[in-house]
Image (cartoon, rainbow, N blue to C red; front, side, top):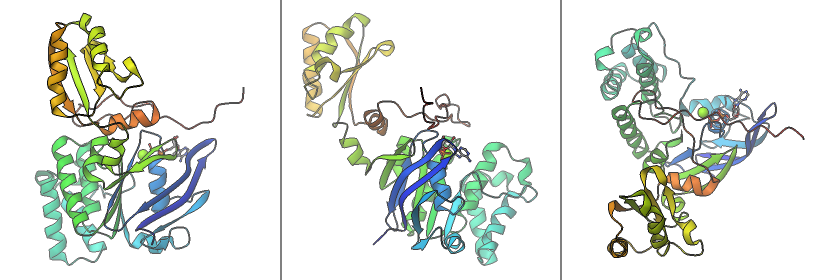
Length: 343
Ligand SMILES: Nc1ncnc2c1ncn2[C@@H]1O[C@H](COP(=O)(O)OP(=O)(O)O)[C@@H](O)[C@H]1O
Ligand SMILES: [Mg+2]
């Protein structure tokens, strides 16, 4: 039986850009699918097709069992969407905006008021609740927009990069609300550039790059593809990097010799995938000590989805800047999928 969201062979081109290049998706009812990929991967295009806002060039999709292309109005009645298209009325207050959404969905007025109050609280908008939305900062609008999408819990929800630009405490608030929705039975398709977010929220992850799903599985399955845990060592002296690399290579998966060990010169950090767990650390420390290599730090860590992305694509995921907290990385180039001009 197809899931709550099912897509087969979705293709969408814009001129010479192939935004979707044959995408298949299946999201079982009551689960969260994380569509993970860098800027320009095709995430928003996929969401727009599935939410009836855009017709694909080819392919089919159903949402809650209803054909997206044949019965778009029926699909719209069973979905919720947050993203760049949500409608916040500038002249209403934050509270009025949320209550209005409740009324549109025929909630009782007491219930709509209570839900609005709760969401304003959770997204740290309570102080601004009775000011018109046009006086809100960019970050506050973004939060109001998310809250509006969460007033009712439709059977199927789509959230397009919901936490991009949120500060950590609002990100946590959103994660909590999402978990509540899902435990209440909502099916969610969430797009994200944040590997740790997909890891945290999604039952299944589909990694998209250049309009294609390049890998799918649970977070653990994807992590397993990178070969388990890693030992990370920071050596004290720059000169120790080369000999330390030789020693760490002995612990690597083999076959690649020194290439098993990745080196970050400016931090003097060496990383090697290992199997063997914590007792291995003691052995590594002893081996390094035996040749007089001094270490500043050593640890064992599980691979992150970042490692997965690198191993799948040969490049790191590019991401947008985190606007509110300023701790994000520089904005990624919007990588387009343009075909190379014929030589
Ligand atoms: N309306 C459009 N017109 C032209 N190109 C578009 C349009 N929408 C998206 N694209 C292009 O399609 C590709 C995928 O875009 P998008 O789905 O927005 O990616 P993502 O959401 O993963 O960042 C990008 O190269 C983007 O520039
Ligand atoms: Mg997008």
